[in-house]
Amino acid sequence: MSKNATHPDVLKRLKRAHGHLKSIITMLEDDRACLEIAQQLLAVEKAIGNAKRALVHDHIDHCLERSVSDGDLSADAAIQEFKEITKYL
Image (cartoon, rainbow, N blue to C red):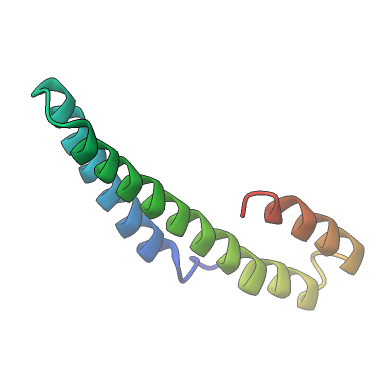
């Protein structure tokens, strides 16, 4: 199977979240204001959510579609996998 088109974007989003998370740890160690920390936690949460959504959508749009059209996966199996992966949205 070829490399997924969105993986570089997902990786970039996760690296950004990782950087935010490291900053939050430093903020906590430095006893920064809770409001500032909460704002940064929200940024991490959104970055991870966006990465997850991009990954799931790519899987549906490309992997499942390709597997069915190539005959590697039956329509019933693809529907079951679709149901499974959409739990993570």
